[in-house]
Image 1 (cartoon, rainbow, N blue to C red):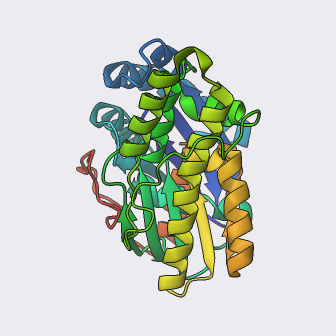
Image 2: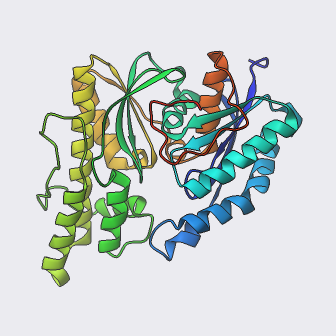
Length: 340
């Protein structure tokens, strides 16, 4: 509807400067400036490099998003920004920019949780979220299972990683295999030519009765296998078998959480949600369990400004009071804090 508020979202939690603009739950623009090429030569994200890249990209990316949406800054009704969790310096750039825009335009500011935003973004593609729903967020920094009664008001943590997150394990295994950074897309691609049953890699915490995850042991098992087999190594088989171990545990735990909490809608978000095998296995197991699966398109799974704007729109719609201009950037903001 034309009378719905227009929200501009700013995402700078890691290495991508994301600016999104929504009108209600309609996506108007989603623009990203990535610094991934600057980090690739280091084999991982360098916080200082990311912060400087955000500074350089902020104004041009905002201008690009406004042009794509056919809007001016004066048309924006509210600003939403990732206040945490994430890299401290990177978050500071986004929060400072959001405060400046909000103050200069005289409009409300909403500091939001990065993880809750990954849940909210699915509304831009598949409509309102069921209440409740079960969300599994899998990325380079997080592997979390969340019960979401209302994304604007309450998110409950059911389980998380006790060591390496799933995306982190993908990056580290890719490095062992000599594949480029970031590792997820390259392992997914290599796995298409391999066998998922070629190597019996361990499934950490798969049957421990909890909803927590562990991928450190799997990562170590892959490294030892590669070291042992050297020249006779089949990279596609290792990639496929490793990937299967990860997605097997992720989907098993997610469906177990749905059963335990009598929830019939599962949402998967975060960068690893772009993995083709995770999507396929999740669909197969959800169909068998009578659970409806929601996964945003890959471009909305990775970090982006649209997800921040979407959560900001939820907060406005729910009548939540704006954040003060004194909000901090909190690198360890807990998932239960949706809005600061």
